[in-house]
Length: 121
Image 1 (cartoon, helix red, strand yellow):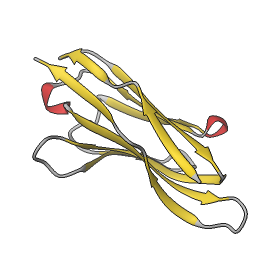
Image 2 (image 1 turned 90 degrees about the horizontal axis):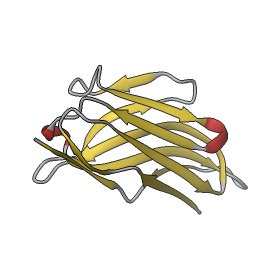
Image 3 (image 1 turned 30 degrees about the horizontal axis):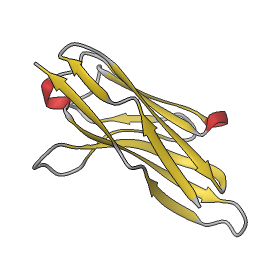
């Protein structure tokens, strides 16, 4: 079994910063792409940022220049540094990873349980 556990969400004023973490654990052989998604009330889930094992990064236009995604392969962890937060960044943030399992290798898509980020104006 493989699981992702997010942490670091909370309430912050506009202009402030938060850092989200997502740690993977379990029967992991390797982790390929990792990503952060978010879903605001009444809206569809959207991709915020993604990062490959080789450190190639991609960002949604709405967060470019404000958010930074990074990963620590030794710790099986991905981070999302969020600066200059805006009220429209308020959402439930989910971690996602493409993982190759140990044993008979299978590539699976795993999601965390999410963490709430609320930005007050």
